[in-house]
Amino acid sequence: MEEIGRRLKAARLAKGLTLEQVEEETRIRKKYLDALESGRTVLIPGEVYVKGFLRSYGNFLGLDGEGLVEEYKALKARPAAEDGAGNGGPAEAPAREPEAAIAASAPRASAEPRQPAFATPPRRSSRSRPKRRRNGPGPGVYFLRRLMVALILILPLAAAGWWFWGRQAAAPPPQEPGQVAQEPGTTAQQPEPEPEPEPEPEPEPEQPPASGQPVPAKPVITVGAPQGDEVDITITASEVQLEMDFTQGFPWLEVYSGGETLYWSKASGPLSFTGKDFRIRIGFVAGFQLALNGEPVDHKLEGGPYWINIKTQ
Image (cartoon, rainbow, N blue to C red; front, side, top):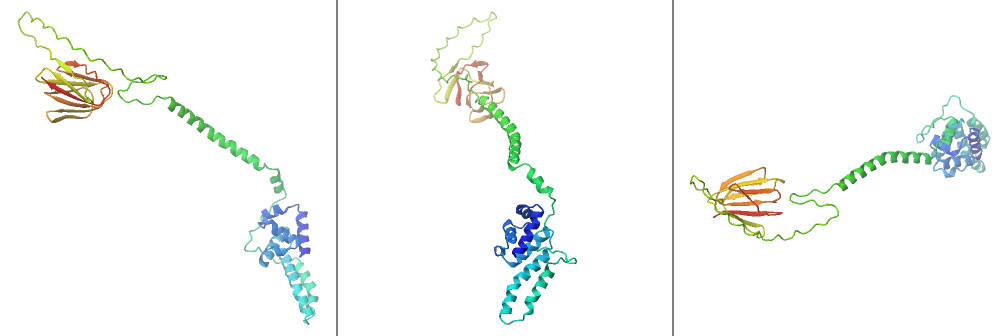
């Protein structure tokens, strides 16, 4: 087997091939190729693999793979024949072995090389192919190329995200209706308690017109101090013409009169109701304008929510 291995190695070196290149082309592992060249077939698992690898390797190098297999078989059978001669067997067997070995090593023109079922067909390659691989870019160049492509794709996305996040961070948070925007760097201050409103002076009676007809007196409207979320407003009239308008948003609004629900929704535009007594639920009073019988009411309320009770006297 060492003689067969030397022929395989000589043919490979004559072609200028390495074991790595042969392994890539024949799909036979490098350690098995080295075992065939060194004659250490015991490293190959099983005679079937030895014969298959020997046939494929020989055909790849341009040798007669089938002839190498027959020669290997003859070498394997020689120890058995020698044992038979020593035990009194026929003496013609050793004499026929050289002829069989010569016939096995001779190239067979009619027999085509057969590939083992477990081995893939070798791919023919010219000597320029390994040189092209050796002269090509290494793995570091491929890594740098991929890194550059990744940076080209990621950097615009990161810049867009940074710009969008900066705009979001710079934008002021949305304010709820009724809240006053504060300038940056200032802290919110608690509103100072307002002094109690001074009693309004009683209007002086107007002189009746020359015609002698009496002028109707204006209704007196009194706004009580808030008690929690309850606020009482009284008016000196037998009937109330309630008018409401909203200039800053549309708060939640409920209007009741005499046990009947007159309105129950978000406020939308000016509203007007007529009745005797009213109970109003409002979510916030920023921009809330109130008028009773045509007279504007300065309720002086802030924030919300409130229950406003309007009563007649």
